[in-house]
Length: 310
Length: 308
Image (cartoon, rainbow over all chains, first blue to last red; front, top):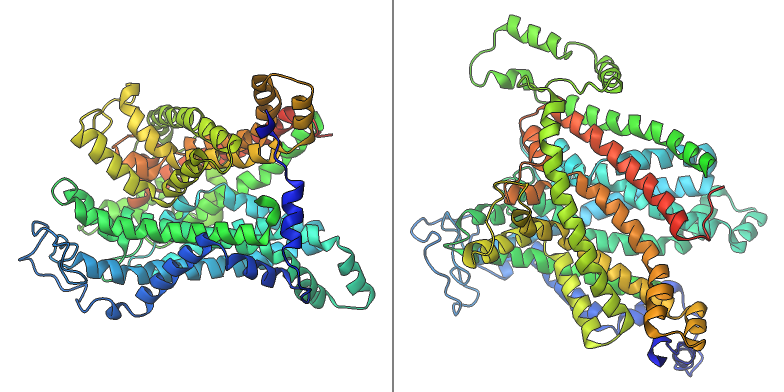
């Protein structure tokens, strides 16, 4: 039976005394950064994300092949040559004879841009609404909370389908618009809860007693202390938004053809899954690794910012 | 308790009207003319268009349309689709299929997700724990449409264990594979949630007491640990069942299941306003009821929570 009860007390004490030399006190962010640097999960996911962002910024560094140049001579039936590293036929060709490897690299841009822009938009918009609801309380809180509830009643994917269906030509920005417009409420809930907790702290009362104005209390005192849960949720959600973009493109209501998206490629590859499974496998693998990297990053950030959850 | 339920139900009313108004505006105020689309490439006869618009109430201002629609909903009339079929009839065909699929998926979430989380949580840091964490992480990161095609190719086409698409949703064996694919994401969450919750409760004082007074291991785990650890899991499962009832656009599409998700996807593409709004209205009600039930369940499971 002894394994049922963990001996947690000495473990925490040891961690605390492992820092022998007295340092100047660190902020939560700095503390988290010190903690993160030592985690293998963080290092792996950060390396993957850096690579992806490099794909997104300068895809031509990784392949000299034009991802939109189709040569029907190749088509699906030309089997991939796995020894031709970094060449056009490394992972074979898609239905229009375009290099799957080049499209994998170029597809990163749409995913990364959608992921980052949606997360930024949702965090700013939802964060401000959550801050207002949590700080002012009363009828402001009631109105914002009920509006949040309304959006929660409509699933994100479903709402995005309806909104995007109205666009005849859809770019990365229409997808970003649809996802921000429907997704901001998630951050509102997180921010509101966090602000309500922090608002009751003594330092907020102290700041008010010293005559600090509303704006100063909100953004100088409450925000830095309430932002941690928002950052965690935002990081994990980033992977989710990338997956949602791919799902929308896969369903044919997301990005459209001149834009290169893994979702579109997966959709066109599913018709030939029996004869050319590689055409589905490689873009799907890229997509999954991307989502995985952001989820792992979010996990690591959460562990670093909130030691209680470990 | 009665007061709490009453307050919650009253709070649900503005949310219901708000959410339906939201979807109504999204469907009807965005560009695209469904009536003109009915004529295809041919030039539409203006008299017929006017007649159809009048019939579907589309010649009225938007707010009047919404009030008219809500009035009908309160009389349980969901209107007629642009093809002339009553929306209630469309839903009557689609919902049983989706409910069957949802129940199969829900079954897998409990039967596979819970034990995985239990094993991992009890033996933290063991190989089993690491394996569960790794597998759930992979399942969470692979998008469901990729997982669906892989499962379909491997189990239906290569191995031939099941049929690739669902021909008859009343045959449970055909729903096993789609149910598993649909359940995969939530299953991984259930396993992780159970693991975390068990890990937290293992350190609780009542556990030390139970072990110290010499209770058998099975009683300690079954009666003390599990009951307390399952509270967050049950609330997750409750919300998830509500979400599953809403149909799965992707899974139903891959396995050709004629459920709510499939009908909804087609209706959105064809700008079938009445069908989309009708189904989403029902989904909003399902969501509201599910979240109410979850909140009440919370109080039943955890006596520390009392709704005065």
